[in-house]
Length: 332
Image (tube, rainbow, N blue to C red; front, top):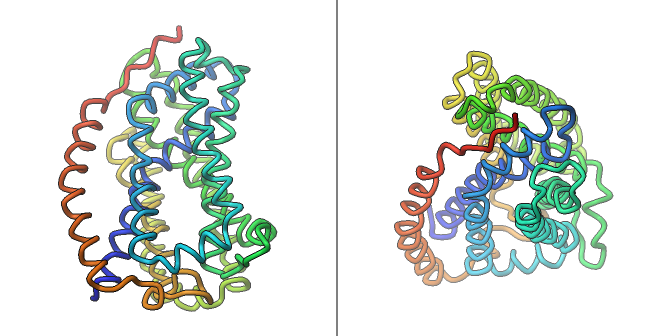
């Protein structure tokens, strides 16, 4: 393994962390958007209590991946920025609006109000961002992004279904995570049944979208599809086992292990995509070897990442331990 491959593995690890942590935050926003009925205020309070302490920290992984690509694969960074500017710009706008709306809603006195303006902005932005990121990932796998045609990724059925799958995956992850948070206090125990139903529904939707994506993969991304059957399939099996395991554990009310299983399901998708796409960074346009910076630069970057992670990871572990059991306000 050379330095460029090692850096790529580290970047995929960063993407996995972003999918598992920020992905659950986005999914919680999806459930905030569709919350209805008498339990809606309690659902929104639970979501706010779960996200409040950690949502800003989760975006560190996206920043890490962007900086690593810019420094380690500058040619690929230029290709991505020049061909996928529209979905990536919309994803960035969604991240900014989502964070701003979350803060304004919290301090505006209507954190759980179903008709609060900032609440709607938060929820819609939480849905738009994973959709756009999924669309961008599909364009990288198919090579459909083209300079001068920013709408190309958004006209592709493959990209649109991939974006919908990203939204469904984050919703599934959030529903599983929130089951455990709902069980943390008796005031929200009645919300668990609704969250369990949402986890099951989102898992079914995600499975249906994944099945619909397969023929489109062969049609629009044949290069990745050929590799998928050998390199990607083991990860897909792991993902399927994790998803089924999460639902079984939720049925047995073992919410802690269910979180791990759901995380495994999402991580399997990320690693399956990465394995099938390698050695291309953008299929048909740029490869790992062609885009890599000089080895000395990448070695220095890897050393900096090692030192940074030694400081970052313990701090994040402490953060999540301190806020492991959110206490949402009583909605009675």
